[in-house]
Structure formats: structure tokens, C-alpha cells
Length: 46
Image (cartoon, rainbow, N blue to C red):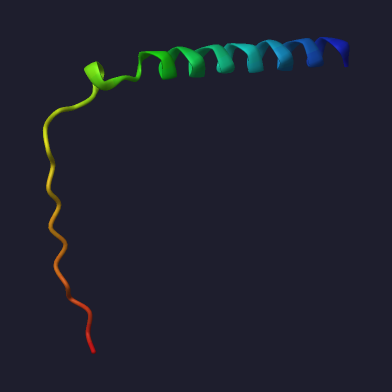
């Protein structure tokens, strides 16, 4: 049981580290500057 809890805590720490790394890399300089326009047709039947 102790080994399982150590494995789970290690996995959570790794996932938290990856999340923090991704959030720190997310910024305006890395954002996509291309504007994408999506047109949705109104096909609702009355």
C-alpha cells in the first residue's frame, strides 16, 4: 500500500510539473496570430 501511494504521488507531481511547464510556455508571443472565422449555417426547421 505504501508503494502504491508513493507511485501515485510521484505521478501527480510529474503531471503537475508538466502542467506548470505548459502554462509557463503559454503566452502572447507563442499564440497563433492567424484569425480563423467559422461560419455556421442556420438550418433550424421551424
